[in-house]
Image (cartoon, rainbow, N blue to C red; front, side, top):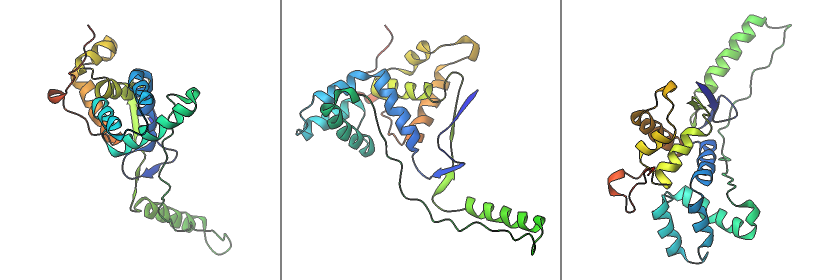
Length: 207
């Protein structure tokens, strides 16, 4: 399966992945644009209407509601920007110790490499970082699972409907694998999934 690294280096900040959040929000734009059109049409001064919209469309988590509030104003000011999201990457980084230097006259290469390996091992144990996650997908790991999440959480599609839409007998897609991908992608994004039974508007099928 194809892989996509969700970060620039081998490690990234601990917690929800900023790149995954951007991919998710762009998937919402592609798959459920009516949610964003309704957002832009709201009275920007009416916080109650914004929160009602957020409840309806699954934007109730603080981070995604803040994104919606901010971007709606950008899109009102410049309709050409509609649907384009910018999710800020955390600007905090731990303080890493300076890397070792080498004086080849005073130290052998083998001894220096041992110190470098010890330095790398120590950096990897720095609090507040984690290994950069990867998404795997048969078609496009930077797109497919985020579309499933957008359709399910925002578009209110059933997992069965998503499975039918993206079905490919060659890779044996089923409801269980779609459900697992949606759950894991939501965790990666930092999104609180709404359970199927309590949805006010119900779920949509392909019919």
